[in-house]
Structures are given as C-alpha cells and as structure tokens.
Length: 167
Ligand SMILES: Cc1cc2nc3c(=O)[nH]c(=O)nc-3n(C[C@H](O)[C@H](O)[C@H](O)COP(=O)(O)O)c2cc1C
Image (cartoon, rainbow, N blue to C red; front, top):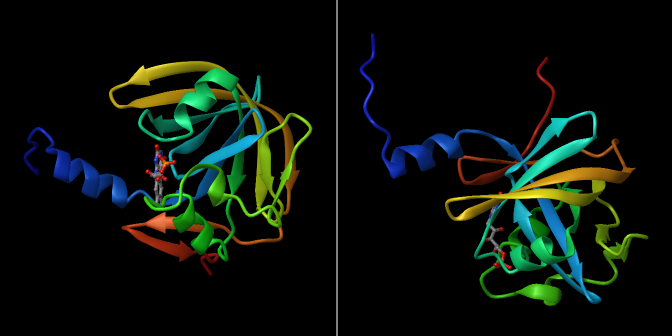
C-alpha cells in the first residue's frame, strides 16, 4: 500500500500537467474590442441547460470583461492551431492585438468566433464563483458552429500534441 502525504503545490502542478486537456481560446467583446486567452480548464457541465464551466485566472486581461459582459465564446482549437494557442497565452501580445481579422468573425451575439475552429460555442455566463485566484464561470451554451472533420489540439505535460484514435 502506498503512503499518502499532503500534496505540495509542485506535485499538484505536476499532476495537472498529466491531465491531457483540449485547448480552447475563450474570447469576449468589450464595446467592439475583442479579448481572449488560451485555456484548457473548460469542461462540460450538464445537458439541461446545455452548459459548461471555464476556470479563468482573475489576473487575466479578459477576466473583468467576461464578468461584466457575461458573454463569451469558447473556440475549440484544432491540431494546426498551436501558434494561435501560443499567441493567446503570450506575455508580449495582449488584448485586441491578438486577433487577426482574417481569422475571426463576430457572432450575432457580439462575441468573436475563430473561423476555422473545430467548434465555437456561443455562451451566456449564468454564474461566476470565485475560488482562490480563479473564477469559475458557469456558461449556458446558446449557439454552436461545428467543423467536426478536424482533429483537436491537446496540451499534455507542457507540450501541444495531436491525438489519434487507438487501434
Ligand atoms: C495550454 C495552456 C492552457 C491554459 N489554460 C488556462 C486556463 O484554463 N485558465 C487560465 O486562466 N489561464 C490558462 N492559461 C494561461 C493563459 O492563457 C495566459 O496566462 C494568458 O496570457 C492570459 O491572458 P492575458 O495575457 O490577456 O492576461 C493557459 C495557457 C496555456 C499555454
């Protein structure tokens, strides 16, 4: 039997790196200015209402806008979007400068949609709960654009990876 000890922050971080995650860009619109960040902490919540959760660091540039506007898009990235994932987590390029107008369109609700995303989920924030440094945004999905023929981008152990079916 293995012994159990209280978890250190290093072991917690290492553990979470081993949890492979689909990579998304969560984006929002503040009076015509688009903001967004790369995220893996996005997961399905329930069917009724169709909803998901997104865990956003309260220091992120988009956080305050998500809280205020309560509208977000979740753009699920495909395996050829590594450079976009890096751009939207960059410490050098911030805010609206991350958006190339050739790659994004505005949805009817006003949130940005990545034209060639695997999926774009257009959401209303229905609740925000603060835990530590993060907000958990509970989001009701109102519309979706799907291109399921593409393959996903996954983040695992500090690397971007493509996935393939197990034989
Ligand atoms: C693969 C990957 C996954 C990430 N997942 C999250 C996440 O789920 N939540 C979060 O708040 N930040 C996450 N980040 C960090 C943000 O993308 C990064 O801090 C970003 O720069 C924040 O936006 P800002 O620069 O506009 O403040 C992730 C970064 C990477 C590279």
